[in-house]
Image (cartoon, rainbow over all chains, first blue to last red; front, side, top):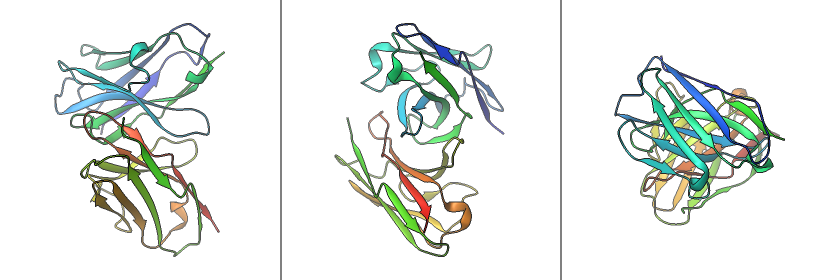
Length: 119
Length: 107
């Protein structure tokens, strides 16, 4: 059974860079049938898609975040990562890693989420 | 960007009721729409994809319909476990956006 687990600092200072890692078990991020991505949710608010990519394929971004986001894949560790630069308080959110079914389709598997506070 | 307008934002209902949530897209997304349920402190859970396909293991009281710009999500007979927040998500043209969410409350 596929499992995704986010990890990273829970507190980031304004103007610094947020870095999170998602460790995947029960499946391989090298599987080209799927895309791997990140979604966030400010406390008490709705869901916002950040970006997603597939091994050896292009990355797709939320246009409002594109200039600050990098997604990278480490197939040797079966992990993928999110880097968000120049953070502000507006980036405070629960960050979820997800597996998209197919190419940027529905999100069939989610991590449990990790709260990142910018302060 | 494709904007998703979900309504209502809050819905009060009783166990056994039939409830419907609507999602409208700012332009046609064919059938590229999913629905999720989210409970407090938990990640969203996929219920419906491709507008009307039921995810494995999801009870058949949940259903979805629509195409183009108008979509509906229906729970045929509310159960106590169904009180949660529901989101629609479009995945057309290599982008993803969510509706604002509908909080389903006990009347």
